[in-house]
Image (tube, rainbow, N blue to C red; front, side):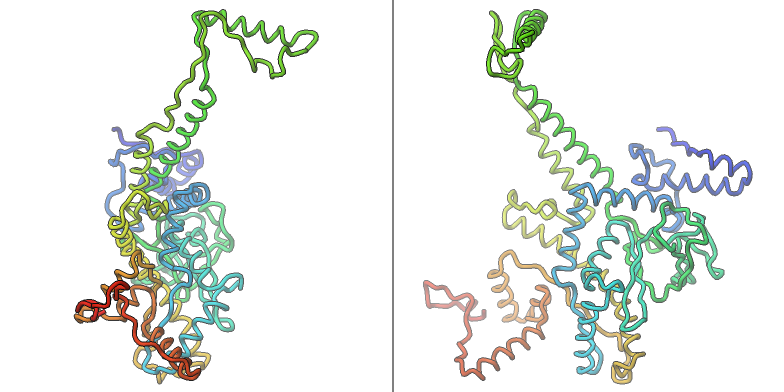
Length: 501
């Protein structure tokens, strides 16, 4: 196929006439758009000879590509059920109903308990600078924006107990739509100025822009040391994120078009399902016209109590037959299922989880599919955990400066901690409990690891059991013996495996 030509609009040609240097830059920017098929208005060209080769991750991303990809992904999230379901399933499984639990690991247990309680309250009441949502509600929206738009920014504010204010990706851009600018002498690409690879400044528009070209007087540079960028780059040298559906936009559009065309074909077939067979179609048409005129003459009195043409009399040689509807066809559903499954592959999502339908797979297959999806969700949780660590570090430094904790008692690394992630319910709880019992017996597993995979803290379980036992003793309620979960109700004999459980 011939290499696609780069087309310049009227503004490009005028600027090229007055300043050839600007014209060359605009020509390069137009050519850069071909780096992402999904950013094109027409994405049917498969010729890759014109793609940009070499360069860093940022060299393949420009403000126009980011803008087009972001707006396309938002349109899909608003108007396409499949794209919306993909993002919903990821958020539901990564955050669960209650979010993550902070577990500080300083050298002082009392400080750990205070930090844990203070951070839980701060996330619930003070995290949102606008005081409209709880912290974990904000984090779900932040993660949705990251998946849908490519990135999102949270700025920590030090007033009072501290809070976070968010702004979307399109507000971070270069002023005047320039490809490169300077902020405090630092090269700035796509609104981010770095020094030795570390973010130092961001150029942020005062309000959400209507195009990538933001006048320089409608924004400002801010320091990046209290801003956390939520994004998942595909390359280490990539400073901005891309929507999660970037490589799938064409496939999602095709599925949507196929469903629309099939619905239209089915409606057409349903509306024309009765026909009259005759040897003289011209005569039949004339006869029906005369019948209609006769019934709607001067008296306007219908011959029967039916609407015009509601009843027609067949003549000799005519018969009525129906057109069988073959929409959707027998191969349509398998083809659509295949396309939907292909959409979920890059995201690690099985089709059954996206559509919430496991009726066509057996138990063993569904369990394998869930295990594979959970591996992907665990990676997503780990990525979010590091971003939350950056927020936790800003919050903890703020609390220490306010005198809430004695840093000298917190050890060499006061930020030491881990996160308890939400787990997933087991598809077969009894079988999993038996497997855990065997693992504990033969010392290749622990209760802590088993409960961690369920998203439950072993320390919390032990504390709750201790509190329950104390309450039973205080109320003089007899404490029952241990219950063997593997005892059969029909037999009192036990195997060694059951004794282990």
